[in-house]
Length: 420
Image 1: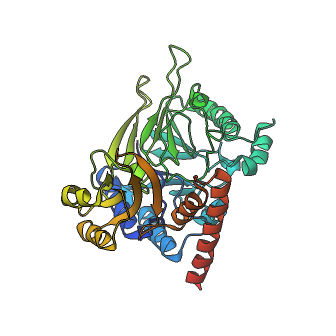
Image 2: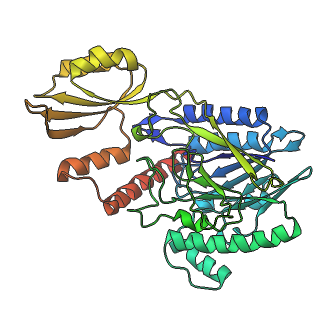
Image 3: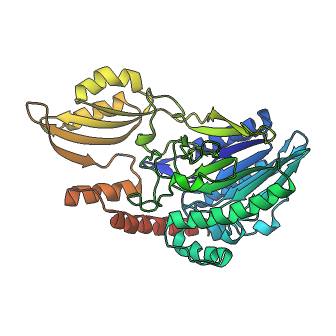
C-alpha cells in the first residue's frame, strides 16, 4: 500500500505581506496530480492545514476546493483514503465540524478521545492502520488522556505523547494478534527534540521545554511515524535500545512552501527544496516493512536569498544573479543611505522582502543594526521589529505570545467581516 505524507500547508499565510494563496494553490494542484501519477492509496496530512484558527474566506474557499477534489479522486479503481489531523495553528473544533457527515473515504480526526481508534484501511489484500493524533496541547488533552489511561498525566508535551503512545501501542498489540502483517503508522504534529527548526514555526515549543524526546518511540511497534509541525523535511533519529530492535521510521514531510528566509536552500532554487514523502508498506518484509521516497514539491515559489554587502556591490554583483528571487538584504554602510540608493536597489531587485542597515567602522566591524520594516512585512514581523528597536533585544516568548494573540484576533475580525 502506498501513502503520501504531507503537512503544514498553512493555507492563508502571508510572507512579509505577500499573499501566498496562488502559490499554495499551485502546490496543491501539483499534489493532486502526484497522487494520481504515483498511484497513491492513502493521503495523510499532519496538521496546520490553515495558518490561523480563524482563516479568511479566501483561505477557506481554497481548502474547500482542494478538499472536494481530493475526496472525489479514484486511484487504481478505489477512492483515495484521506486522513487529516489539526495542528497547533488549526482550530480543532472548527476543522472537525461535520466530520461525522464526511464521505467514507475522508477521515478528519480532531478528537483526542479517538487516538487509539485507528483509521482501518483495507485495499485488496493490503491492510493499514493509521493512528491519527491531533495536536496534543497538554492543558486541554490531559484530562481525556488521564481518563483513557487510568493514571495521572503531567502537563507537558512529552507526557501527553507518552500517554498517547501507551494507548496506541496497546491497541496495535491487539490488532497484530488478529493480523500479524498489518502495517501501522501514526500521524501527529509534534516537535521532537534533536531536529532542525526554522523561524517560521510558531508556537508549540519554548526553549525545548515542550519538545518530545525521540527515545519515546524506541520501543514502538509502529512502522512509520508521519510527523507534522516542523517546516523542513527531515528524518528523526530514534535511539535503539536493543541490538535486535527495529525502531520505526519517524519523518517530517515539511511544509509545502517556504515561509521564512531561514528555509532557503543552498544553493538557492525555485521551490526552496520543499517535499512530500511517498511511503510504501510491505510488512511481509520483516527487515524493511516500509520504504520512504522524498519528492520535491513543484510550487514555482521563487528562490529565497539572503544577501549582505554594500549597496553598490549588491546592485553590481548580486542583482544580475538574483533579480527575480525573493531577497532579504543587509546593507553595509558607514553613513546614511540615500533615497536614490534605495530606488536603485528597488530597480535592481524585483522582490525585496526584507532589508536592514548595518553601520560599520573603518575596520569593517558592525557597530549598530537598524531594523527596517520592509515594504512587504507581515504584522508579527513589524511588531517584533518594534520590540527590537524599542528595547534593543528580541521579544521574549511571553511577549511573542501576546503579540501573536493580538494579530490572530485582528485576523479573526477581518475573516468575520469578509464573510458578512
